Image (cartoon, rainbow over all chains, first blue to last red; front, side, top):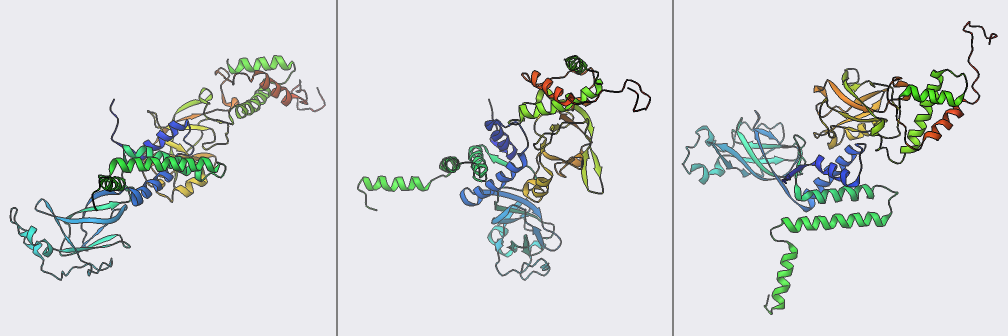
Length: 235
Length: 196
């Protein structure tokens, strides 16, 4: 039987309700909000969720950041069917009212480079620069990028508010255990040992997930280090 | 058992001249008690007592900017989210498409991410009607299918009526208690208190 590699947050809640034998939707939205916060915490503190966004630069040379944007990895502009990375410019004024209509540098985009010409690759830092303003939630560009398509590779909170949120199948157990722990942790009538057990269970699930997904874990480095010491190899 | 049959059984048991409509009311009150006593620990086992109502209209209240439905029938009230509205679905299909919540919780949740993300549409009972959270495309839905537990009085006389097994004696006991002290009905319909 085929099961889905990606599932929705709603799937996680239904999986939890099914395991608990809860046949009522009464606390559905409460559980979902707990899961949203849990997934955000997991992405920020334990696992890193990368996302991509393609937007268009507006008439004042800025682009609104997606709501789940945490930190940028790469910002590129589409030129002749290729995304050309831009350079970060810490000196760029990013106030929302700065429309940056007068580039300080020569604007090479007025004569689009020819495909196959290495001009853009070699001198891409001359095409334009960008700076991210987290408070105003905008990327400001230096250079005339109006109406250009911009590709942003970024660290996401994991919860884009538009569209459906998908999570990896391997995270379902982690999230379900997180939900169980949080429900018990916030219920004063649950004995502390039951809460601690749920917390430990979540911790084990999380470690199992990190072990299975990280290319090289800290634990593996530690084991290799110890193994080499046992063989008498000097560090 | 048909509803009318049950009323007649109780009428024979009471052996008095109480009007069947009054007995119906007593049974209705007793039935509410029985349902609560039987299921208060788990309101999940009420499927048998539910009735499904198709094509319940969804209307828009522009004054309050809220979508709502009126009750398709008088329902018994349960002390849980949804208050006796067991589930709501689109015209066809299953699954959790609408999820019960409470009016106050909806106020809180609408300010959180869960109020923005796509998902089941929240419903809650407020202003003597079923209101919906303004998310999940409720503005495109004109009617819904609703499963509710109708009050005993709201059933037709020929409708099948179920009560939890083992509660037979209890329901009669409750009805008799309600009937105790009931003054006899007037035999002459002349508006005069003095005639019998």
